[in-house]
Length: 408
Image (cartoon, rainbow, N blue to C red; front, side):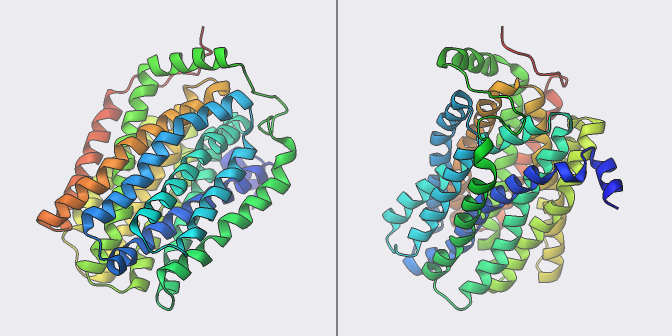
């Protein structure tokens, strides 16, 4: 069975340990973010916040991620240190969520949310560069395992958080929710830190500042890289809009309880768990563009369909289909970016993409909150479908897939 699995993925089972460990860390960062999103409706209720204020809190998350993102790419590529920044990311996010449990003021929660946002985008340049360099011949599949970790974290956090919220306050839930990220940080530090700076390949990728900025200029001028980053930004607007408004829609429109809400969000992530490895391995063989187009189109249709479903079980089934398509695309987009990027600038290319995603995503909670306050929560889903349509169009306009090249 393991031999068949290795043949399908292109990587021997015994060589996949690093990918799965980094995926576990990715799951830890998404666990922190998912706990934040799930407790948000209860923070909103207990503190008497409006939808626009709740959206502002999430906008702080994305804005801080965007501001920190570009600097993190510089740190990762200039130092060549991939693992140490993964550890710092997990400690920062877990620590901020722990401090949530001792906070009851909106401004303090905004400040702590800044640290969660910074930790989220500090992770990606370091981890994606590490995985890409370690498995260059099977980048799509290896990065799908990294994405799989995110889906697992996002899958487990909603029902676990929902169950805790049924018995505990959101403050106590936040304290308990911080533990997994902090434990995983220690595990990654113990296992991988000794080889840090070599990407698991024995080749160190540190560089001088002059070389770094030469490479960065070449990336920014690359039409394919920029177009891919903008497309990913519109896709991310949809994903993060769902994170914010799907729980609010379930609680306030469908009128579910916290446990059912948690399982509905979990259903979206389960779809991603199934889809990510399949899509990643498929894209290694068939190319990135057709896989991305299939996922984006299916996601658009599923979002529109959800607005007419009111029955709980049918709604959860629809959310599962949505997650299957939406999260299948994520690792393929990352692989496509790194196909276009020289390895030494992998961290900065990742920062460019995630920075673009964070900037565009920061607008969704506020705009969506204003739409929800004026026209109802269902209207927000048409906005999210519109962002997916834009992403589809941008994929069609992207130049053909080409190999990475060193800047001259």
